Length: 264
Image 1 (cartoon, rainbow, N blue to C red):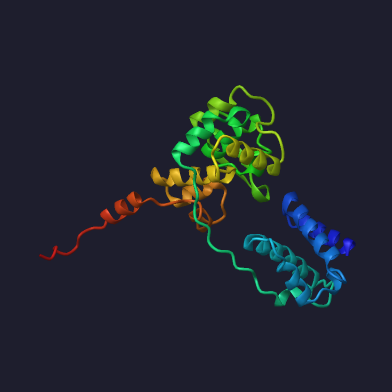
Image 2: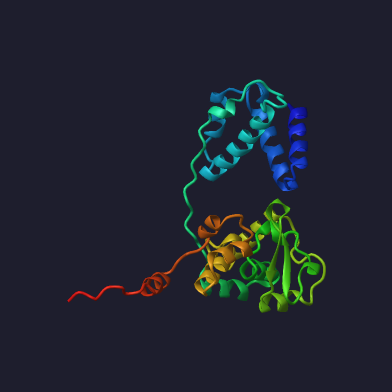
């Protein structure tokens, strides 16, 4: 099946998917092909279901793996140009993923993270004040940032422009070349280890991005604007990043007009 997997990956390249997505698809399909008794070509619904039911995986991981398997078989069994004559993934049940609760760092946690940042300061500043993901931190270059804007290459190689916060410009202005060194995975791991070491237990890079979104919304930005700044394709995704405070709820209710006399 190696040849067919590679043919599928070339198809994804032609469709414009990002190299990261294609590499992930290749890795997962190769793993499934090796693990199943007769490989992907003769996979059964039961074998694929059992593979996805392995212990130790989160529901999000299962959903991700399901998506890659389903995408492969839909391509391989396309009536217009079929490579296989049966699609076992069509009968798989899509794993459910619970809606996540926003977990932004608190202002105090962010202040402590910056105060103790050391060599991680640039990554922390960019994650918190530009909302960059670790995969974006791994590629951002000094040439991408000026006093007014940051050009970000995000998921799917989509480019967006973010206004430059003053703290970001002060941090990166004297720098040259890559602003944060390492892969997305190594940056995430280094930050998590650093936060744990300085006593910020439970803090990780993505919670800085949640702080970025939550703080913008609390300070009056609308959800669509925050969504664009985060590089989300839908405000529904952004809503999962933003924690709404009781004060914001009370303020919202207080704006309702009184259209009938108050009963006595």
